[in-house]
Each structure stands twice: as structure tokens, then as C-alpha cells.
Length: 417
Image (cartoon, rainbow, N blue to C red):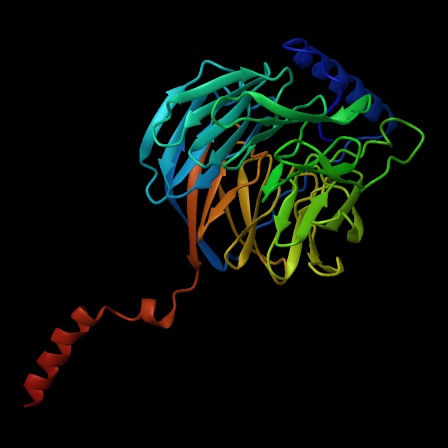
């Protein structure tokens, strides 16, 4: 199952038509060469982790056809989510109560970014929209000339957005005015998708369709370093696809990145030096904890790599060709979602499947973890919060309540007396 592939998009609505033609052409070419293998069937198993749905909600205007970059985000005590039809809402993390809900009348395609008093989204028509985090009031709306398929990154001094035409823009958080821009050449053939930028201190980082990662100064956009993670290889344009469409992740002085038909790598935040890299193809992304980096591959495997060296720790292949989301570390587990809306929990140290539930429809974007709760937004706007506990009750849970035991014990003592 190949990800959507498209030629360089034309402005505005012409992009949708170009995408359809490119995808149909690619699929026709592939079908002539060999039969496409079906997604792996899910096998029954005995869960060792119980998953409870804490609450659920629905956002209007979800789109099950286009794979949009509409991921949820959390900040403080709220979760923020957007639907393709233009609706944006803020939910209480604990109970799902709606704090505010607004309609932007925009065809939303990238978001949500949240933090520093703002909730920011992008549209298919190249608009960036910033709302007040407290009540959803619109602060500003500006055109940037390119579709957004990922959430913006927000700091106190800048909003950083990445467009499909290879631009990284720094916008003023108060007005939306462009402060700087950096551009990278986009190959003639690319995957549909872009990765969310990251901001650490005064540095903004982003991956690009040419297999490079850039670090720029958030004050003026000056390039601090430019690292080639995966150079294009092969004779055909299809073989030379090396898009970095996954979000760049940063922990301390370490930068983690993965690309399609390329590599997973750890870079130095200060210099871009590649400390290690491993041949892995992914267009969804990765997550990490103190010990390991977890990657969902383009083929549907979940791979754990040792964080400091990149050595493979385990590989789970039960989800081949199931269109996995990026993994999300939640407590002692790694959660991933698939094209049928199933959410799978794996044990972090072994990759063993311990639980499975379903949110609704296909999930293209990574779930969000806050504490022991996992928040999943499907491609049709269905949102659910899941909490876990052991499937086998502990000794304390299995014992009768103390209040129920005491009267019987007291009665027995009285009869004996």
C-alpha cells in the first residue's frame, strides 16, 4: 500500500485534480507490474491491558478521502482539534467538556498548533488562521500562498509554518505578518504531506521533500545548519523519493527524524551532525522515550531502535500494509492507529500486542498522549479519549470492599460469643 504521491501542486483548487491524476497513474503502473497485497488481517489475542473510552466528541466536516494533517494538540488542561469543514474546538482533557467551538468557513488541512495563548491552523487555500486560546476568538488570518498539511509550531516570539511548496515561514504571533522565509527546492515527484516543524529555544527545525533537515534562527530565519539525512538514489523519480514528511522530534540536545525510502537518524541540535542513522522508510513518523525510538514504517511494521545507538531492539510485523499512524508513547506502552480506525497498544520493551480498540474511521495522524490518557482523532472528525488499566484485576481490586466484609465478620464474632 503506497502513500499518496503527487507532482508539484499548482496553486488553489487545481491541486486536488493534479493529485487525483497522479495517484491514478501511479496505481495503474503498479497494477501492471504485480498484484497489490492486501492489508494484514487482525488476529485475535488475549488482551493484558484494558482500554476504557473516557469520552468522545465529533467535529463537523471530516474528510475520509484526502489525507490531511489535522492532528489534535494539547496545552494546559485542554485539547484542541479541527475538522476539514472549518470547525475548531477546545475540549477539557479530563471529561471532554467543550470550552469553545467555532467555524472558520475555511477548508482546513493543517493543524492544530497550540501554545503561548494561540491556536493556529492552516487551510488548503493557503491561509493561516490564529485564534485566541482562551475563547476561540480570531486574532488574525493571513494568506501564505501554499497549502498547509501540518500543524504550525508556536513560540512566544514566532509562529513557524511549513507549506507544500517547500517554504518555511516565520510569522509574527501578534499580527501574522511575515518576518522571514526559507525555501528548499521541491522535487518533481513528492509524497502528499509535510511534517510539523519544531521550535527549541531560538531554533526552528523542519524536514523537507529533498531529504534535508534545516535549523534556522527564529528571529531572522538565518540558516544555522543544513543536514542531508537521505540523499536521493535510483534512476527513476519514484525511486528517488526521499521526503521527510514526519514531524521532527527534539529531546534535549538530540534531534530525531525519519524519511520515506530513507533513514531514521539522530542529529545534534547544535550542529546537525548525524550521530547515527538506520535504513528505514516512513512517511508517518516516530516517537521516543528515555531508552528507545519507535518508528512506524511505510510497510506497516513498528520498529524500536536503541536511542543512543540506533541498534534495533524489536520489530512488530502484525500490521503490514495497514496504513499506520506515527507511534505515540503513552505510559509503559506504544500506541498506533490504522486505516480502519483500530488503535493498538504495544508493550514498550518487547513490542508485544497487549490491547486493541477502535475509534471510528481511518486515523492518519499521530494520537496525542497526556499522562496515561491517549487522545485519537480520526479522519472524519471523530475524537476519543482512552484510558488503560490491567486486564487482570490486582489483588486489591479483586478483594471485596472492606465495608462489605466488616458486617459479616462482626456477625460471626457475635454468634461465637
